Image (cartoon, rainbow, N blue to C red; front, side, top):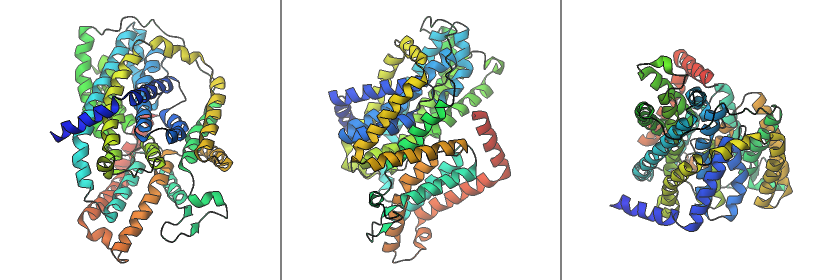
Length: 501
């Protein structure tokens, strides 16, 4: 009964005209950036972060969430029609989705992808609604020591699941933690690492780092690539899958949804890992594995469902524990802090309208995306004809205006440009920006909980291992480190990310 009451509250919030409008706007923007190669959800949300400052908290977060899972839908459209995955997690969709299009079944492929994503989104929303309250109740038993240990586990998990070199990911995490220490010390009021620059006394602005590393750096990286536009291989045709296609697709859709819900909770690229894992699973379970890569409906339905379920399941650690599982949820924590909302289990009790409104808006957003993605396929594909050299000046101006309006300070623009240059260099060195962002978000929170735990324990460092829950979390973190260091697991991890690339 209590869950039903909470969901009714969520519907009353999400169905308001203002929140419906921002949900629709987020879904349209998400689909748009999913369609356009080279523009992903992370840089887009980073660019739009300052706008949430003038929006109500619920409307701002609903819009950002719509962009995130909308990009998962939009990425499949061009992956199927023109073999250009607009989003990383849509790479697997190309394998069988584009082959279906070449076989004259483009409409059926788009329908399978959209309906599979809708089913997965609905199930993932129910999972969030069902599991979030019990997890939040457990989280209320956490003290400063437990929160510190949980954040250590989250950072290590993010490093383990980050693609690329482990040492590089660790270095980026540590750099993010160090950047989080810049500014005035909370306890003593002493300025740290500000080099006499007054603007740094309040710390390094999160939006400036996010826009620089993901916005400006993405622009510089994409300008190096020549515009590649591919014509449609076939007409879209009928949007209805036949009986055989439906029969082969729906079991894969169910399995992909379950896999995405499980892997999406993990820190790191849950949606990307889910789609690759689903494709591998479907190929192994199939009686005709030789059909995969040639237009098998299961090779499309499974990864698309897993992708969307993983995208939405990543909100569980964000909403219940205040721990970002990936770069997008780290940006959403940034949006919460802009509105002075402390992420964590207390959000459910202190801001129930935000918590349940956001959850219900996910279901409404998925419904909107089905309506948007099928009838407007022709419009989205025409956007591929717009050269990137025309798009990037508009993106650059939008970024600059956004970061300036956050604090009305020119220093923030220079800071964004500096991090843009650093982000470009890091991309060349194959160092991911997401671990840096997670370190920057979690660093101040880790330091605060670490020092608070020591104050309560009167300087006794053993408090982190004498408290059972804290010790369990630290042991889990240590096991993760040991496991990933084992030669056999290290080799499998490298092979998985080579396949992903």
